[in-house]
Length: 485
Image 1 (cartoon, rainbow, N blue to C red):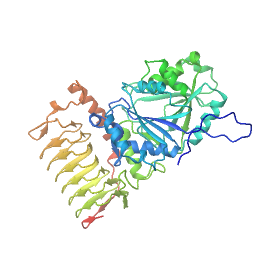
Image 2 (image 1 turned 135 degrees about the horizontal axis):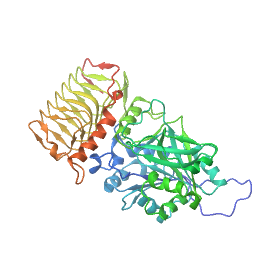
Image 3 (image 1 turned 30 degrees about the horizontal axis):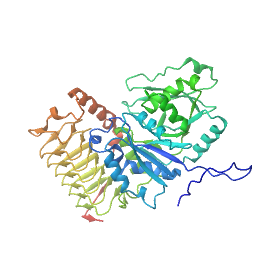
Image 4 (image 1 turned 90 degrees about the horizontal axis):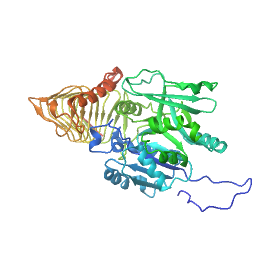
């Protein structure tokens, strides 16, 4: 059982052992972005599955590995669903690694509103972790915490340490992603300037002339922002001082660094290069991290079971299969695929580079290529699906084709003999005429125009599925007989 907090005691004598305060953490479950629509119109982002496990599980697992004892969750979108999930989870049971796991409510339009609300509650007593609700990491935080505390002991104005990861040489920055520039004083690991450029801007950075007085500078555009921050309560005070701040980096970080001469506060970096640290920030990252987890490339994070406790069996050629899966003969399972428990796959079907959720039904002579099906999806016979994400409880009729880059929302229905054009977004309200999706009902954005939807879909299609690495297949596994396990 975690140690209980004690009341303030008299000052300790020299050489007397000291006890550290319990590590507190706040999890920002909402990003206040639309990068996962249409799925987040009916389900909170933190409960979307990756490798058949809700995103929030990876974040809370990470905090448990960090030794966090008091965890506060901020939810804004679909908060009732989050509350129901947490109340039924292992994180609030007597066996939870946390001393407390508390869901906080706040009416907010951005991260800044949440941070100001947290400041008003006065519950953060010392250094705490502030993390996004979509992180996937095995990075041990203890060394970074010690560096932060040592720096803080020398300078009380050192208020925050950002965990950044060195992007590997083989890791691609997708053409539609923004470019973050960190200007760092390597002698103190201090971030001096931050700039965020849109994908359409050049890669050049506008360096403040004041930076030239530093004898040594690192200008980095190759860092992954893990959104894992070690903060002091002073960070919350600065959020409260400026109500215009809403975004953690583009507003808050940029502003604090720019106003250094006024506030004297410094923000530092800790760069990870030998552990896995990433966040599922958008659909591009969703695909990359799914691949990393399934292939065993995510450091020490290995898929051996899912959140329901179902064990995963490792087949040849890096195929993972859950319990009670039915494969009718013959089925072709190509490498880098994941099949959830209680799923059935019809004869003569081919699955390659795909992740299939639990209790899905796949018909005969169906081809899934780079497809991501969530739980309880039904796919008919003679269906071709190429590079698509399909929400839970969706239905696809026989003899249909789903083009590249499509997004099928929860409970959407595709009639038999339908062709869905590449880059389409299908929701429950989408209608079909003569076997082709009616594009006029494609708008899931509030007050969106056809051009808005086409642009959003185009970004998804270009940034995810135009890349050959998601379509590569090295080998296959043929099944000669029906298999139930």
